[in-house]
Length: 591
Image 1 (cartoon, one colour):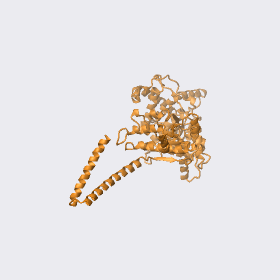
Image 2 (cartoon, one colour):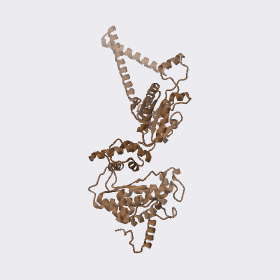
Image 3 (tube, helix red, strand yellow):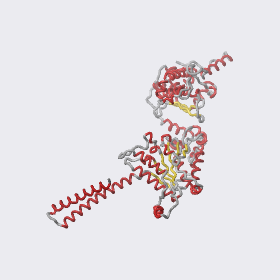
Image 4 (tube, one colour):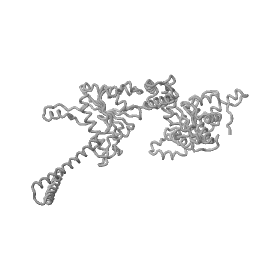
């Protein structure tokens, strides 16, 4: 096929030359040898210049597109050590084993082992996956290439393959010089999605299957055949002077992803990403370690301690902790303080989680009253029904997209929830509507998200975790929405039952609801400590203990057991029997 195409091009060029000669003769007015020769030479030079210029353009274009965004870091440039990676000591121990393999790769090969080729770091964002790769490279004293998987993709078919080839070619050259080399690919799922699901990084504009070809190139470069990389060794092997087995330079590919389940199985087989390390958010001790590391770098007063800050940031990643500490310093600096305190830290957390304060100064008093009672209902239910959580703040000042909020924080890490805790969450969601009906005499549209959360929790209670009459799980049915529709009568019955219970709860604690709403109208927001003090002032006791809170459903779903409201009634009846002349502890709700 190629020879036929060459014959066609040669015929075309000969005809073009003959045509140019004839035109030159006619233009010169007669057969002049020098004139014809100069004309032909000028035309040929013009054609060569045009062809050369086009080639230069295409070479420059493809060279520029094939470069990619890759940062090459030589040993010692980052200075990141094990002391800088905090919060996950188990992760550090596993990473140290990899460093020991990279440092002693020659001795390891003498024992008959093969150098590790791939390490996959999985976990949520901000847990330090990319930073861990930098620490491994710095501790092993080997070169480090930082690349982003989406940067390999290109509109032209084949350019992404060239980028991958260039990175691994340079990595093998550096591995020969330094003993090993590390390539870190961030967000590897952008090009490593399963080909069965139509993934693989998309398709090139000028060719079909560009994404799959990019994944195939990555698979090849991670596990290539044993070939000599240097030209000198290739020359010796061609002459027959080099007969021993060719060795691959030890190149370790470290990749990070938040979605390990979508990766192609060929990437996860032994010889590629055969080691997976899950980097999760730190626990309480880990957060204390992280806070201690960052608080030492800033000026803070004794009120801001790592232990206190770690208790308020359950579920936070190291990146979030670093951001909150820095924001606390910013807030302290803006108010003219020399040190950051706990109040600055708290303000930084609230701004990060909920957004800036944006008061609605034009809101009418009746609307403010509606919002205050809405949030008071949530706060009362949270305080009485969720003893494992503490009320963090209740506010009627707009933050983000909400006119007000009532937020809680766990007292400690919780890894599972009982049936009573799920029912408590449902009642907390429904408490605002219960207060609106009981104390305001109307229904407001602010319960949209509350009803959605209550419905989802009720569906999970009945159809996922088998806490109703049936052990059937709709997760096995495929479509969750269809399963929720099928369970609608039971879910609605459960929600109505919990609504009746939470209505009785807020009526029995009407003075608590009114007091919180009044203070919200007066001050705008209340902390959890202030709400706890209000409860002590009204009832002379602390909040219920976890063992006292036992929520149930009606017999239609589960056997009825005493609810917190019933327990309170029984306690009051016993107190009245002991002292018949005493006044009732709770007054009737005001109209």
